[in-house]
Length: 428
Ligand code: GDP
Ligand code: MN
Image 1: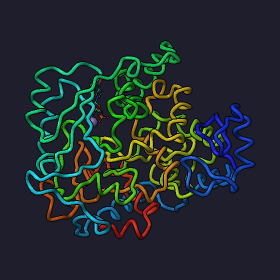
Image 2: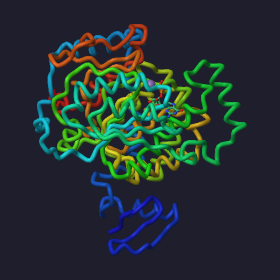
Image 3: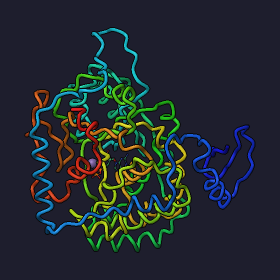
Image 4: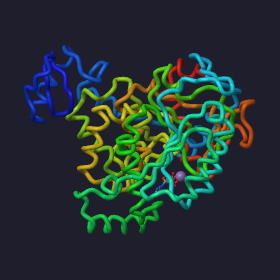
């Protein structure tokens, strides 16, 4: 039987390379389906027609869009009416006694940040420390495309109870790659500015999104870690967390944890979906049969979104908070996909966000039951919140999502209704 070590190299079980062409990979993939084993792949393998079928989920409704938004928000509020506390399943690793040894998970808090954002960063670090890290002392990794100032380093060192590491991103990782046509890019930027898309005119924002999509987990310094908790300056954390979140992920075999799910501006991801389907057609073995296909292709609440993207709802996990396993990104499914996204250039010509990229990757290539909604983490990145009804929380009001005018941006009801199993629902 055959397995792949990467998308173009086919080996037999004695690890002899027997072929290296793309076409051959496809052919052998077809022969091999159902009979062999695959490095990294531990699930049933779908054929491309089956995948296409799974991804053409289309709901129908007689209701107007405004009613659908209203229904979904009602569902959301009813759902948040339930009082919750910590996850009820699995063992929760508690904080060690003051000064006692503690065997931490292989993990770091992680933030990409500029020197100018120091005050907002300290604001958020204080909350993370107060609610959680003062009990566990996980290390921090501060990442920047520029050198951190001495003042920055001193201030964060003074505010944290874990070791602080400072990483500067090499220019060749941060800047646009050689295949980007800058004339074409500026032309596309003009068109997006005309449509008043957020950050349309910013090259640095595109660098940031591309870095967060495909490169942070490849930084030399981060290679030692498996788990990261991404946070951002200026965000708020409302609830005490009395268990080790990284160990929770590890012990319960989760890959990706999130708190908020939203729609995105379709103009920023116009070709992400077709480019992805191309990749999936060539590599059907990577698609997990228990993927989050419905959430990815829902088309009722914002039907124009799925139309403008040729089938992607634009629903995503908001990536300014994430607790996830970097080995997922480092695996061949995701990293091969990033390579094909890079060839397309959409990180620059369109401004693909790291949130939709992580989300489409997780939604297609991972078991959706390995995605955990941290309902118990009260959180705000303006203008949106995840605010549970819980004794452990203060400073936000239960069920508050954000300004009512933005209700149509909330994709959380879809996640709950379309993708959460009864077992997942029973975690709280
Ligand atoms: P938004 O959340 O999409 O509005 O984008 P933000 O402006 O909050 O940027 C996302 C994250 O990337 C934040 O943690 C920022 O501090 C960081 N970030 C954005 N642009 C840059 C940049 O040019 N350099 C550095 N070092 N960090 C950046
Ligand atoms: Mn932000």
